[in-house]
Structures are given as C-alpha cells and as structure tokens.
View 1 (cartoon, rainbow over the protein chains, first blue to last red):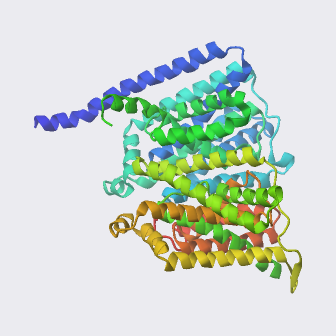
View 2 (spheres, each protein chain N blue to C red):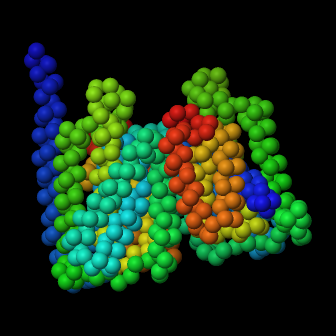
View 3 (tube, rainbow over the protein chains, first blue to last red):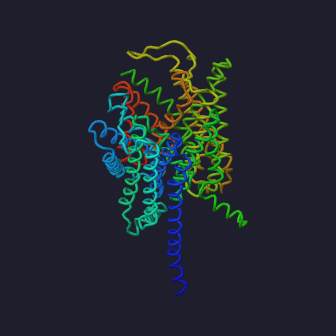
Length: 326
Length: 286
C-alpha cells in the first residue's frame, strides 16, 4: 500500500517540481527579453530589428512545436503565416482597419482555415502529413500569386500604428507576444490536454481506446498552431509594411521546424532557443559573408549528429557524461 | 492534343527516374529524402561543368554525374543517416537531418557553381513531326534513355541478388538481417543507387530545361507529389505517380496560364488524399 502511494505521488512531485522550474524559466526569459536585450541594443535599430525578427519567428515555431507534441511534422506553418499576413495587409490597406483589430482577425482567419483544412488532413500521419503540409505551403503561395493581381501579388504600404513606430516599441511588442505565447503553450503542455497530446504522440490507437476523442484534440493542436502562424504573419506584414506571395516559401516552413528541432522537441523553450540561436548565428556569421550559408548548414548537421535531442539537452548529456554513464 | 501526349510522355519518363530514386531510398531506409532535388541539381551542374567548362563529351559528363551523385548518396548514408538512425529517439530526426543535408548541398552548389541558370546545347539536333505535334530529337533521346534506365532498374531490383536483398530489406529489416544479408552494405548501395538516379535525371534534363542551384526544393516537391499519388515506398506506385504528374503537368500547361497548373495539382492532390490517404498502391501508414 505504501509503495502504491509513493508510486502515485511521484508524478505529482515531478509536476510540482516542473512547474516551479517552468515558472523560473519563464521569469528568466522575461528578464532576458525585457531587461538584457533593450539594455544591450538600446538605440541600435538594426539589432533591435534582428531581435524582433527572432521573437516573431519563435512565436510561429511555438505553434509548430504544438503540432510536434501530437506527433505530426508540420511543414505548413508558412501557409498560415501567409494567410494571416494577407488578412492583416488587406484589412489595413483596403478597409483601413486599425492594426489592433486586424491582428486578432488574422488569428481567427488562419485558425479557421486550419480548422477546415486540418479536419481532413490530420487523418494523415508520418511522412504523408509532412509532404501534404509542404504542398499546402506551396499551394497557398500560388493561390495568392494568382488571386491578387497588382504588384505581382504583393500588398504594399501597410500603415503602422503610431504606438509601434520606433524599433524599440516594436521589439517590446514582439517580446510581449512571445512571452504570452510561451506562457500559454507551457501551461497547455503541463495541463491535462498536454498529457493527452503526449499520449496521442506515443500511440493514437491506444489513446482512442481509453476514450480520448483524438480527432478533436489533434484539430485543437493544429488550430492553435495555425492561429499562432497567422498572428506571426500579421506582425511581419506590419513590421516590413509589405507582403508578397514569396514572403513565406517552403524554406520558411522548414525553418520553423528546424528552430523547434534545434532547441529540442522535449522542451517548451526549445523553439525559442532554436530561433534565437539560429538567427543570431546567422547575423554573427555575416562577417564571413562568403561561407556564411555553408557554415550554417554544417553547423546544423553537426548539432543533429551530436545533440539529436536539441541544444537544451546539452545539460542532460553533460550530466550523463560526468556520471560516467557512457 | 498529340503535343500534349508527347510532352506528357517525356515529362513522365524523366519524373519516373526521380520518383524511383526517392522510393528506393524511402523503402530501404524509411527516410524521406528531402535532399533528393538537390542531388538532381548537382547531377545537372556536374554535366554542365564537364561538358561546357572542361569541354569533354556529354556522355563523359553523364557518367561523371551519375558516379559523383551516387558517391554523395553513399556518403550521406554512411556518414549521416546510418549513425543518426541507430540512436535517434524520435523518427522525426532522420527527416530533419535530410533537411539539413539539403540545405548544405544547395549552399555548396551555390558556392561552387554560382546562382546562374546553366544549360548545355542539345546532344542531337533536329525536330521530328508527328501529325500536328513537334518532337525535338534531343527530347526523344532523353525520353529513350530515361525509359531504358527505368527498365534497367526494374530488372536489377527484381532479378539480381543485390536487388532482391534491397526489396527484402524494405519489407522487413530484422528478418533480412537474420537471413545473412549485410544490411549496412545493402542500405548504402540502395541509397547510392537512389541518389545516382536523381543525378542521371538532372544530367539528362540539363540539356532540355537547364538547371540552377536553387531548383532543388521544386524538384523535391515534385518527387513528394509523385510518391503521395502512387504510395510511399512502392516501386509500381512511383511509376504511376510519375505518369500522373507528367500528364497532369502537360495538360495543365496547355490549358492554363503559368502557375495555375500547380495550384490545381495541389488542390487535386489534397482532395485525392482525403479519399485515399495511402496513395494508389501504398500500404496504410507505410
């Protein structure tokens, strides 16, 4: 009996520990985003812009992370960024809606498309899902290319609200968005729904057999992902003040995956570490322009070969190494 | 009408080489080779380098392209995939490793060959007329070589010892190893053969459409469409997929302006997958 109790309370303990560690990690992230970055890069518009980029890319990758959580490789986030971006761009330029109204609408439109498309597509698994979402990215690009006649399918001169006129203001907005997204996804991953997601990743049939409505949950995950992609697209449209069909291609959809993977798929912070890591590496390698992209590729393969569970697993690998386990 | 049929047949024969290659790799290794389009691109650029820059005959270029891309494929299997798959915790790892490799190959090609569109003059001059349709002699040669290669690969896979070992490995890795097949060696050969087929396809097509360093992603996407139509990991399915895509493209380009064709193909593909998620000949969740 005593053993039984101990066994039952072990996950509870682990979760309490996890939640304290999670809160600590979020606090650290907030300190970095609100304290360190503005302090270091204050007045340097270029670098603030780089950090804004990284924060927005992290936000979209967090969405992809949610679909990784249900065991699907989603190469369609570029499509939803494009849908959200065009929603914001068209509402702001044609109907002259304020940005703060466009952004939630972008999330709803992208999420809605995710719902409609996800319902049938999520029946596919493994490489089929990966390939069909990859096709979705390309199909969405071709859709906007063929439906919007002016400027080669682009929407230009998207007005920025006065609150976001300076690079610092835009950065703080992106950082806030990222923190909220991270807190939300972290909360989700540690809730009952998070455990349902994990059970579906391990074995969908088994999850179904214990009464989990897997169709509902996998659509939920996909809609969350799509809506986050839509918000990212809307923010980028505003940041660059234009959007083209080629703003998000298959390469961008793949990059969102790589950020998640590089940081580590087991960690909510994974996509954030991955996105900031890769974006900063890219900027730092700019000094050796000629070999930059080549080194970037080598770097990626090296990390995959030696840290297959992502950068955040480095701690665990080192601990195991010190313990003489390997 | 005749023109559409001729164009469709030529496209299908070329696509069949690409689809066969990616299917061999997927069947044997269970890896979706994202770098397949990049291997195609390298095959084309090697031919360009040998025949237009060095000045050797086209045949030498094709042989060199086949050999070098095949070796790249074997090196990928030995150095990257075999290692990662031996200890990867999640199956996504191999897929993402392939993405990383695609990125690396594309950038290496950009650095070595530049970003220009490269082409070489046709191997043979002249145009045949078939009814109302035109058939350039060069395309006929490309078509015949492609068909011959597809038949050769089918014969190899079905009737040789190594080919049988490859098919066995695709069916059941453990059982095949128990039968005394050197799984590591066969995997390496299979990956090399799949890669070499992509290289040959690029080497042949550079004389028709030209190749540039950025063409990889588009070719990989086409390869994915074909194996989604036919069913992943099934050789017959790959050929059916190639036929379907080749003719869909030929019909589409005759009827619609530019990029509408592919929009329609994608929409049709998604609707098709709703009805038959595993493709025409695929095993469910193969």
